[in-house]
Image 1 (cartoon, rainbow, N blue to C red):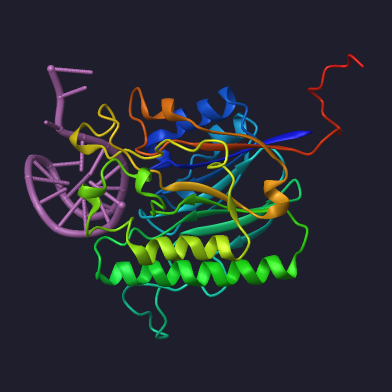
Image 2 (cartoon, rainbow, N blue to C red; image 1 turned 90 degrees about the horizontal axis):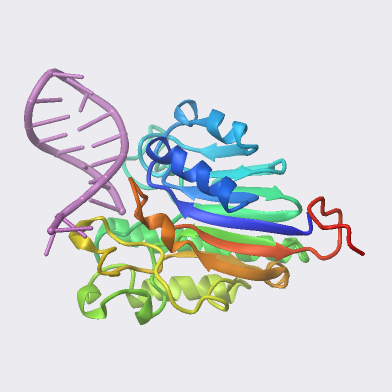
Length: 281
DNA sequence: ATGTCACGTACGACGTGA
C-alpha cells in the first residue's frame, strides 16, 4: 500500500455504535482507526463485526468507563497498554498504588508507531480530576519525548480525544468557557508541551477551522456550537508522510451518532507495492 | 421541529460520567 489512511474517533460506546463505526471504516476506506471511549471490557467488544470487515482489533478496556482500541487492516504489532509513568486515579489499591485507567494503547502498524489516547476530562478547574489531567499530560509528554529520542526516524503519532481546545477559535464561545476546563492556560501549556517534545498537529495545517465534538445537549450540533478537542499529533517523520487530512463532520448526523466525529490523515509512502495502483505506466 | 446520552443495577428509575 502506498497510501495509508489513519483516523481517530471517540466512539462513545462501541457496543452502541459498532454498525456506524464499521460502516464508516469500509465506506471511507480507512486502514487504521484509533478509538476512544469504547466503554467495555474485552469480552464485551464486538470483534466479529470488525473481523468480517477485514480489521484486526487490539484494545484496552477495564470497565464501563473510558477504554481505547486500535483497529487495522494490517497486523497490529508491539501492543503497549498504558504509557510508562502514566499516573493512576481514585481509591488506592491494596498495594497503595492508584488504579491506572484504560486511557492509552500503543501499537505499530505498517512501520508507524501510533497511540490511541483518551485524556482525562478534568471536570472543573481545581477539581482533583483537573490536577490528574495535567499530571497525566505531563507524564505523557515526558514518556513521548524519551521514546522519540530513543527511536529516531520512526514515524510516530499520538491521536485521540485530548479534551483540550488549544485555540480560542476551537470553541464556539470563549464567554461560555470562561472559568471552565478545556481552555485554561495550564491545559493549553500541557498541549504545547507535547509539541515541544517534537510533535506537530498534522491536521491543523490542512484543516485550520472546524470542530470535532458537539455536546448532545442544547442543540449544540444544529447550532454548530462545538469544540475542537480531537487531534493527531505526529513526529517530523510522520508529518513528512502526510498528504491529506479531514474532519468527518457528517458522522455527527443521522441516527445515534457519537458526540465526536472522526479525524483523518492520509500517509503517502511513495511508489511501492500498491495493489490498487492502476497499471497504466 | 428538535432542548442529551450511555452505563450498571435490576425491572423502574436513579446515580454517575461526559
